[in-house]
Length: 308
Ligand SMILES: [Zn+2]
Image 1 (cartoon, rainbow, N blue to C red):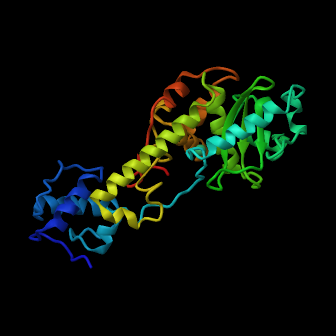
Image 2: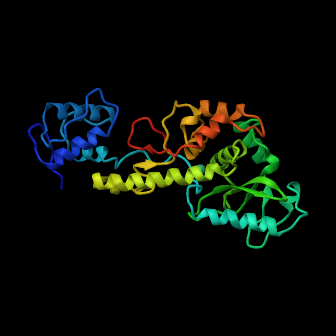
Image 3: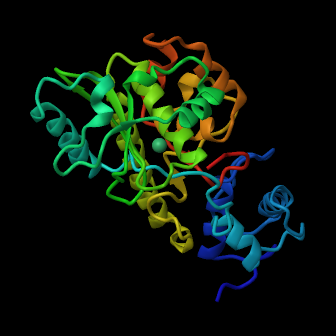
């Protein structure tokens, strides 16, 4: 059991708290020396952290403050985790592509909905209701004639979206949403990936970015647990805690978010991001989208103000 730390305490547990405080913005104070000596500067940081996090401002580090510092009680997920960052889905995309190609020439993109392929759940167009729902968020920025949906789901049991280019169909996007209807959040989130595909010169760049960003989060989480074993107590460790590809800080420019951050922002109704999405016409390669998908990005869920 952890002892309660206060002014005058010394030892490695004090050093650990000083290190944790240094990684917890915002702060008005300079970084603490991690010398294992609990003095007035450490106490001031502890009180500031307690104030920022709704804790009793007593400057003592007991179980509640330590728990918060370790991030054991950060807000749970408020949206969808899709399966695009899962590399296991790349083979699924390939299977769908191969089925489309091997099924031969007569498949026009408009008639795709009428076909089902061996080993691949029936591919169909969006319903009128789904298109109307989509337009509420995306306006006229999507080419619905190229968007298809299947009941397949990702390796992690979650929805994922792929872009497929074949000689008979050109590039189409296929949302694989399982047997969920899909619900509004799933539809809006996966359509963000469709949008990323339709407005980039490389229609699969959103997948590359999602996979690399999530891999970076897992690597960062592995490093973090070697510094602070407490993070392993969070149920989302090691894939989505403390770092995750979905975490974003509202208020940045479109190009400063990566693939899952954009999809998460649209899903959460971020006004500025949605305004940008709606401003791009069908068939246009969007510079901000190209910038967005060029960089691997992750966010730290312990940072105040982030959205996960
Ligand atoms: Zn996603």
